[in-house]
Figure 1 (cartoon, rainbow, N blue to C red):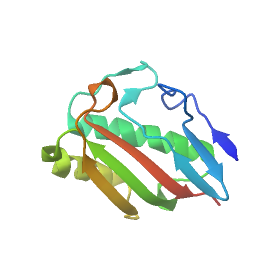
Figure 2 (cartoon, helix red, strand yellow):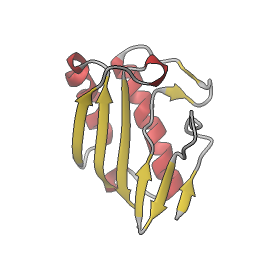
Figure 3 (cartoon, rainbow, N blue to C red):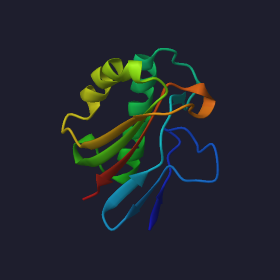
Length: 124
């Protein structure tokens, strides 16, 4: 197994890694809208937060040696399902290959953010 760690994505908030590659597959931790340069949540709207989440995931993918085109599955967590359409608009710009996905509403997310996304991707 190979640990995936990059300074270009937020450091873990707890005892976990940004991701692991095993058997040609990347398993990422969930990413929230922490801006890694500020080490804080700067984005306010669901669109801004989704954009930051996708940028963070892009850096984890890059560090693992893969990209959005190789994502097989995502799991998306929303603090409010009323944000579903706005979330999808930003999400669709990054996940153009339309990977399998689950999307659920949850009561709360770390740091009070509006969304979190984790993914599984092929690494060639």
